[in-house]
Image 1 (cartoon, rainbow, N blue to C red):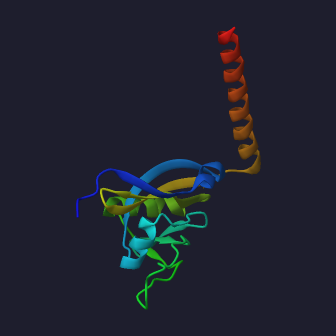
Image 2: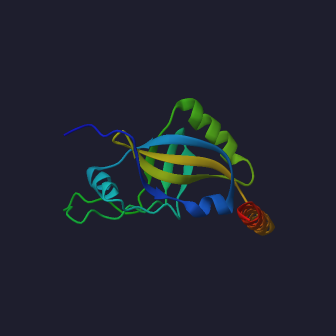
Length: 156
């Protein structure tokens, strides 16, 4: 079988960028079982309820839903089990310190295959308040209206 090249995105957490202010992102490998990899290759996963933690010097991904593989037998995996993240020691230590600060959390942004290896992009994020969300939506809407007005003016 030929080696895979490039990236293949399996799942994105679109709501994360709406609910959080992303301060820093990290790419981490995942420790998966065989049926989890097969299920991911079918493009089935959900990051919506996921988060990451650092316990005893190890990083863990929790709450991510990877459904059971249909053709799996007794070797099938639990859909929402804890999965170990593969990061460098310095990155784990930095994430442990920063995630203990008030209001900070570790959120998965996307799950993908990079050159055949399963990776997850996690972000150190700070929760947005409701008025911050409304302000961001208003700015985006104003920017769209300005671009639309400029394009109409240019096409005349």
